[in-house]
Length: 84
Image (tube, rainbow, N blue to C red; front, top):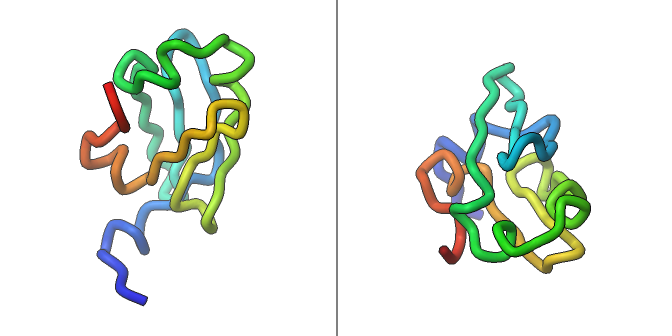
């Protein structure tokens, strides 16, 4: 399996929704946030749907089961937030 350095270095240990933003705590203790408005599925969802975040793939991805939406931590760090 092929990995890039960011896939190995940055893993989410906690994810939550707060004040219109998805928040991530990374394994290196950095915290990142992005507005849900950057993703059409998250933007159009209810607070309960956006708040239901699962950390998947050993911390390298996020999944919203109510919305059938997935984002990678690497993609978020690179500014890729899914469809706008």
